[in-house]
Image (tube, rainbow, N blue to C red; front, side, top):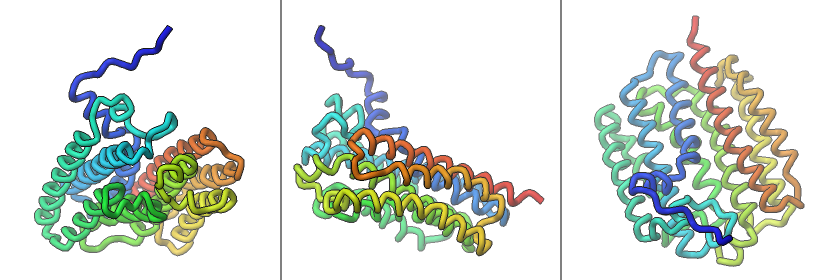
Length: 305
């Protein structure tokens, strides 16, 4: 019996499917941690915090949709194991339509970002917002195509980790606590590891279509080494933050996801196939979520006197 493609759902369902909603926890967690870091100093501004959370989601969603559009045009997602959205895989939207959706999302992010920066009387944040939109657009769109060069890990880890955490905090207070830097660094490493696991899975196909990620330029052993360094760096950063009192002792709650990061690092080896790297990718996303929630909880609990 022939297998039939699923029927095209309604417009709203197609739009939501194009955003890759499950991946948006990466942006959401970073924003929540940025706000949680302000709880001990009683510096949280709920309305601005909510705006920053929405802004981070818009930025990642726009990047997701545009990434799928550009990868469809270059053939980078033209295989069964790709991470493209259901809307793109089923051809419910065209690359041109995906570009339009991304443009709307980035435009909404720009309007919201300007509103937050001016409403908080911090016009300096406009530069951070501009950089975030430019990097999100240039991530896969020409002429820069950062994800098609050995720059993908930095172009995702820094904005999604340090950028969102720091930006969320800086929008609410002029005195950003040290915890923001330590927590942001840990989340940046995990975000970079997520992308690296994705690129390690796709490296053979990426090389065939001219997508020269860092994973395509490294040997099998070096691909594994990079993943292990990124994951092992998480507990090291957290330990340094705790020992220097940059993080409160309640953030020891993150010891469990830190241990999981080490375990995931040890599970990577040169003989992993695409499915094996997919499992590492899923682990990275889960560890990122657990790390963010643990750090957020620790920061909030440290405010209890």
